[in-house]
View (cartoon, helix red, strand yellow):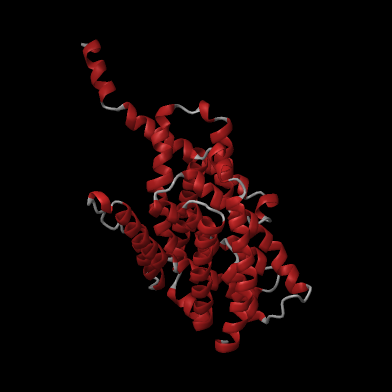
Length: 356
């Protein structure tokens, strides 16, 4: 009797499902450790968000200790790096409200649109034509610089269905140049190199610095008023993630169909539903349907989910693949950074004179 019942008990938990759950749990525990690590003053003061720390720590593990992880867990890691990140990017919309965007009015929106569109165009052109990068790496690097750092890289990675090491290269650019901005921008203001008033500082910082945390860190070294304006302008850039993803999705789909035209096969447009979810949650947040405590709790949970996704991407990243791009991806990021500083300042001054 007892021996006959044993196979039934084993059959109720398929090894593949159990392995996937174990992989997800492993990534969650890893992300929890990363969250604690990023809260340390030495790291937090650098403006490095848990997302950034996650991909770095994940890459170190993936390249040095990957053999210690059971192979059956790989599907759970892949789930965290793909499906979970789509959900997390969608919930990022709870951080933005239409009322906040309205506070900076037409100047803030104009700076955001001009910076995002120009940076994407210059980054794609410089990456593909000058640096001879593949399309996905160029787009990911441009997106991280143009919109919202690591979160934008995640969103584009999902839409493009690109390889993890390409996202890692783009995030590396965000870390390097975004961190430089945190120190150089406030220093330039205090030394009198940037002749901008409070509105101008907010527009410039929020319109050109990569990560949300980096914007807050840099602007807080100037004034509370500049920090408020810069944060709202930055969130306006985040809001542009939706139309940009839809436009990029259409362009990529057209390119794939053109390449497949010889055999007559056509692919339907893969609509990034998580981007539409992002927009829906922006509207929910704007209507104040949810209590503040609930919104805060969801944002905290969303940050953790994004940290899981970045950690999983890091685990799947191989340094050997990054080396293949050599310095080209970094040079592309440097070109974009030069544009953000010089071109972004010109856009800010011009917009403030016309609309400020």
